Image (cartoon, rainbow, N blue to C red; front, side):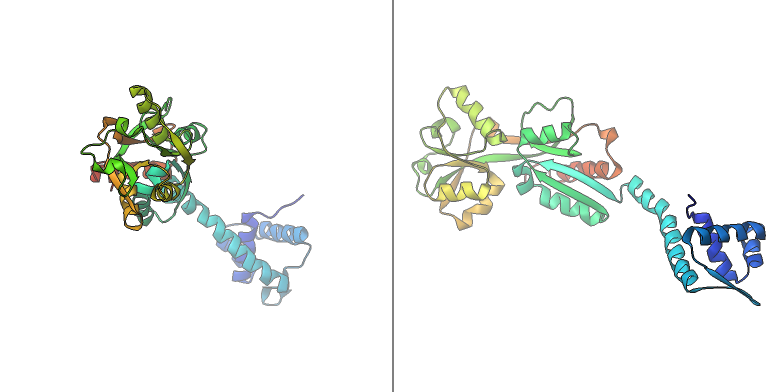
Length: 304
């Protein structure tokens, strides 16, 4: 079955613009017979008369004028393909899939993504929120280009880069017995009920390991997956909790709670970026990785 092709459309446009097949042949450096054959093929494919012969040459029929508009649009679209593809190969266009922990999203990524998108408006970012262990698995499975997770996790065989640090703090109802202490270590809080995070979260893993280290039970009264929910439950006096300091300080003005810095060494957390292989990233994803590393270095790698 015959099909339209860009060359035939270009020749049709030339004939309409030049008004004679002979003039179009000169313009396109082809034999007039070859162009006539192309025009006959187009009319056969479309089953419609496109050109009307007159004593002054040829002029398009109504169908011919419609095809002229469509042909110009189609050829213009084809001409845009190399430019569009070049923008993807250079990283000025494309899609970057990021999977990050809740703490990373609430503390670092909004500002970092804003500055990236301002400089790369043609790049689309898909941001998925997961716990740290699932972030790593998403990158391993190629459902994310870049992952951001916290603290020690089994990230083999991914490539891992330093990103930022934050500090965990204790959040307690105002006037709680712990508020009167001079220092706060996790071990000293274990006689109280906790509002904890969902299983597998980086904070829960840290607190579980810390409790095992001191060989004391850690009582989790309620398990949640939302920062706002944790803050409200602590505000209601149902338990105490642990949050990143930057997140906790944003919640203080609206809640009847206090925060205290944990003195444990592990309370300072390190966030890392993981990718399957830096050399295998798309140009847009490679630019994103470089940007995240650069802005973190400018801020000293700490939470804003």
